Amino acid sequence: MIFANPKYLYLLLLLIPMIAWYIYKISRNQASLQISSSEAFDLPGGSSWKVWLRHVPFILRVLAVAVLIVILARPQSTNSWQNTSKEGIDIMMAMDISSSMLALDLKPNRLEASKDVAASFINGRPNDNIGLVVFAAESFTQCPLTTDHAVLSNLFKDIQPGVIQDGTAIGLGLANAVSRIKDSQAKSKVIILLTDGVNNTGEIAPVTAAEIAKTFGVRVYTIGVGTQGEAPYPFQTAYGVQYQNIPVDIDEPTLKQIAATTGGQYFRATDNASLRQIYNEIDKMEKTKISVQEYSKKQEEYKNWAILLFALLLLEIVLRNTWLRNIP
Image (cartoon, rainbow, N blue to C red):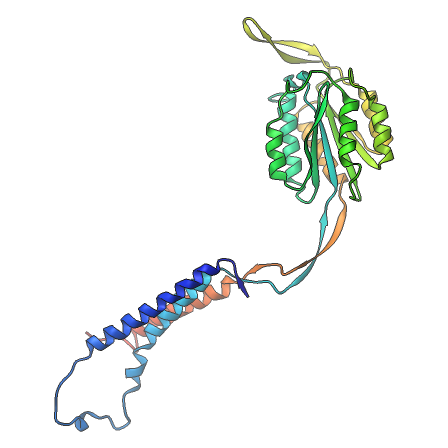
């Protein structure tokens, strides 16, 4: 047995002054009378057993305090082996952060909706290595593959359009994600590419990047974000922000070809609910079981101690108020 808070066990030293005070109090309460002989007061069978049992309530209280201190120290058992199956893969997320992601067909806009849903997806996969690549006309790695999802989530919050040159370089974003995951030793390597436009810049064609991904055994899921038809977009003018409907133009044939080349799948998200459903489907499809043998799995053992504490206190109260009651 070990203790999660072993420092609390030092409180057991408080039992020493507690016992000393009790002994001092008993000695002060003893009445004395000087007589020539005490033979007349001697009992035939020696001292009454109640004389000794009168200390039992105090002993029970001392034991109760000791048990309480043990409970505060949180006793735990660690001598067990446990076979478990965990699910873990490597995932790179490639997200479009071009200015068109500010369109309002998803709420509050495409970019914020994509960030929120992706963050929920990450929180639901604690055993995965997950990284993040962002792209517009250029691409850079926001976060390499990591299991520290708290750091990754914070980096997600910092994503804003305008930090790199505007445009949509789907091929460049995909190629950057492939370069970050290609050397992974995981059984399953996945890229989730999200965009709302058409490849209009960059030195690498999207289909070429897909062929590179296929070479390294990387599966790519592509997501086109945007409603059908037109979507409101905020324009900054001299009179403040003005909203104007702009056509939604997503290169679905290219995104479908990327997914088909790599063994992935293409999805279209026209609103927040469909985007969340897409991530749920990807979550269900991408599961790889890993058998893990865990040793010394900690289990809290305070329950039996708590029962003992309750029993000691109850017994003390019963004895103090019945058989061993003091009459003033």
